[in-house]
Length: 186
Image (cartoon, rainbow, N blue to C red; front, side):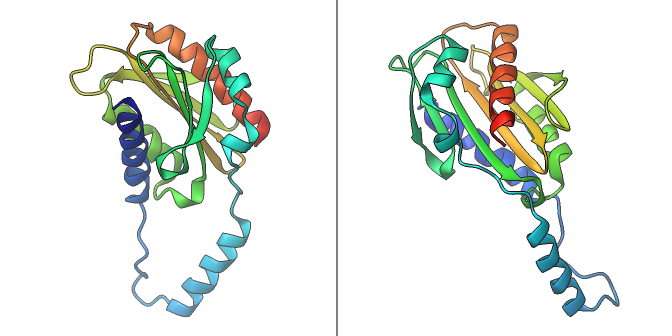
């Protein structure tokens, strides 16, 4: 169940980002010119990386203070889970900012809106911009976290899901460390 909630949250956030752009040509714009620009833009697009290949379960486990295993989950998000389903689980993903309609700001706005009683925490010194949002999913009792950093055109996302009563400041500290780790791999 917890994996489904995290996967749904990640999908919702990417869907919110994907809705920000428009592919319609402006009046009088030459469609062939638009297509040529799209091809040029795709050549310049930042390359995302595979977190499951680049970030080991041991590295994540050290940060959250637990033994975790990793596997590719739904939507190619790398999941790092503990044996106890109530304990903190981590999901890390990367995507070129160019694939997010509306870019990083729309992703930040979506992260804030998807959590109940959300609190935005700006994070300094990671990439171009980074943040974490804490709150609850729906009527849940435990604080959850969604975080992201923009590093050289790549959006790195970290989701921490837990049912063991961890405080928001603990989750923000863990997410900050995980974003730094992932940014170093970008």
